[in-house]
Length: 166
Image 1 (cartoon, rainbow, N blue to C red):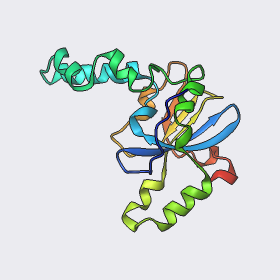
Image 2: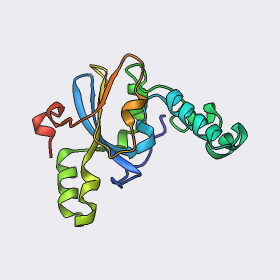
Image 3: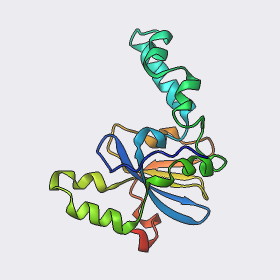
Image 4: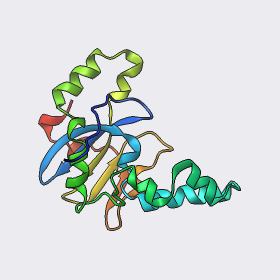
């Protein structure tokens, strides 16, 4: 049986809304933002560079975020989220799916200062190897796409099926 993470609400800086196209089927997911950085090798290299540049050691890096293997284990051992790992990854997020109506209602009843938490942050199309981010800077999801993919910081609403927009 696949370990599934619990359903969470969008929360700025922690849990983000991702629009996912996989095998010509579109779904909304809400999950911790670091799960959506597609290439963990690139992400870990950035962490390593930042630690070394600040005068910290590899031991301190590993004490704080773990070895590379431990880091990847936080995402079920998936080093690169792409077409070959999408099914396995999404099976862990089964409970994190939201319908368009759920997101629309939750945004409508949320406090005014929380409404932006319900804005979609990223769009990943596993069928066409593209990823768009609308997540506020300095977070750069598009810098962590798999090799051979296209990623950019741009509005992606036109890629969302009309009946899935909220």
